[in-house]
Figure 1 (cartoon, rainbow, N blue to C red):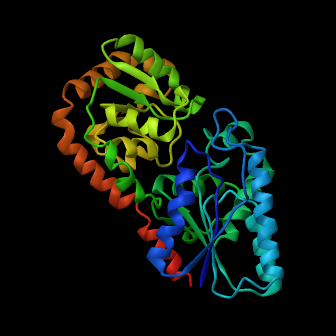
Figure 2: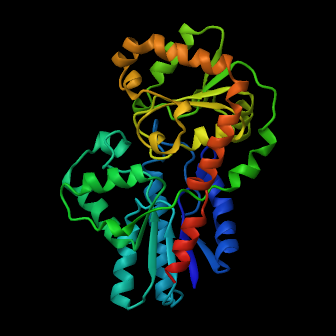
Figure 3: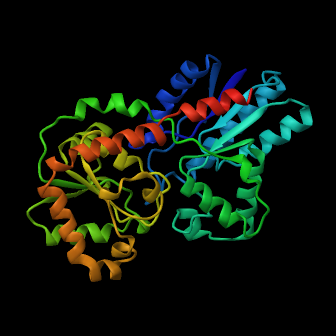
Length: 353
């Protein structure tokens, strides 16, 4: 079997850059199979403001990937038993891949990692496109093209199937929770663990409406004894960002959209206490001591009504930072094992031989 990775374009400040380097290595080590990366070449580094990708550049990238895949089929380089892994399942080229495999009689397996889509009302697609028939049909079609639809959390699976299930009959057996293949983070961030901490609280998320950065900015005004930093506004390199994480005592979230949450995991790895609402994927992933009631920040008005409680919780975390380290170690163990290991993904691919 050859495993073909149809990758997502790398943005230097995001984990997609690290996936370019680490995922092929991890797959080869875990499966002992040949791994070939199908790239779309260089892509614009500037993402569409508030988004995960450059909306124009991503289609150039995917088109080049499709051209490569088509040429491979023409040259007879794809064989029965091969596995195609899309690291971003929202890639319409999987439909053309399915077209080629069925018409050319090549029996392969296809898996895709779902990050977001129109089925999430707070995602860019959900907010700007919503439930228009073309996008819902496209997502349902892509889901059906994959033999394995991989998700990082049960929360994400439930949201996906419930939303698309309103219009389509969805085969839930094709959805698999595997966590994300990010075990490399433990080693790559070890150099930032043990740094001198200061009274620093970070907002490590995208600056987008669904992340509610205005709440964080208001908290900064209420708590002048602490330093508050919105990371994305600093134009940091990955190393500079990780240095800030290493110095921070806390990372804060009032997110209305989250299907995993890599930044708070990175923070936990370097001893930054997470403070998150009891909703979304957080409810599944976080220990109770690191969550606050969802109602406190379900919108800005709710935050204003509950602001004193949010402020008190932050002060409690900051002033009792050392006492929370035992619980934080338990939190890291849970995240390492259940959500940021590729073991389940690699096993699913091997079973797809």
